[in-house]
Length: 146
Image 1 (cartoon, rainbow, N blue to C red):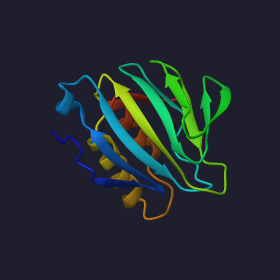
Image 2 (cartoon, rainbow, N blue to C red):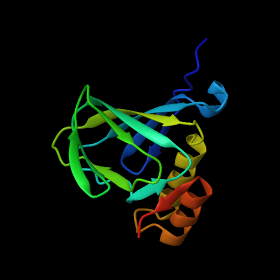
Image 3 (cartoon, rainbow, N blue to C red):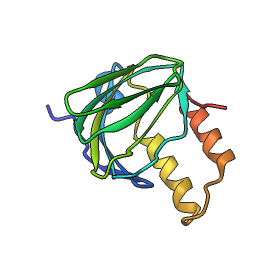
Image 4 (spheres, rainbow, N blue to C red):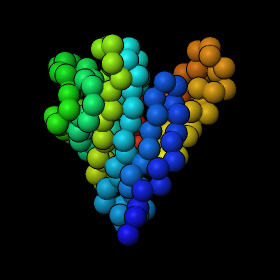
C-alpha cells in the first residue's frame, strides 16, 4: 500500500512533502521530507510537548540548536528531539539540504504547514503577523520559545 501523498507545501524558502500522514498510521507516526535552501534561516525556536521528533539527514548539512547546544546534522546522521525541548535549525552552508522528520505520535500534519504558508503568503514578502503565527503554532501543539 502506498501512503505517500507527495504534495509539496512551500513554506517560505522551504519545501515539505509528507511521506506518511498520521491518519494513515492510525496516529502512530507522521513522516515528512523537507528541503532547506542554502543560507536559509527557517523556523522560530519552539518546542512541542505532545510528540517527539527525529530528524535524519539526507543531503547537505543543517545547523541545529537543541536546548541551547549547537550541532550539525549531515547525511546519514540523526538527531532526536524529545518532548518539550526547544529547538530550531538553519542552513548556514552554501549548498541546499534535505532531511526526513519522523514525528511520534503522528499528530503534526500537512495542515500546520499549509497554515504557516498562508500566513507568510498574506505578508506578501513583508514581516508575518507574529501573533497569528504564535496562535497557529499553539493550535497545532507547538510552543514558540520566548
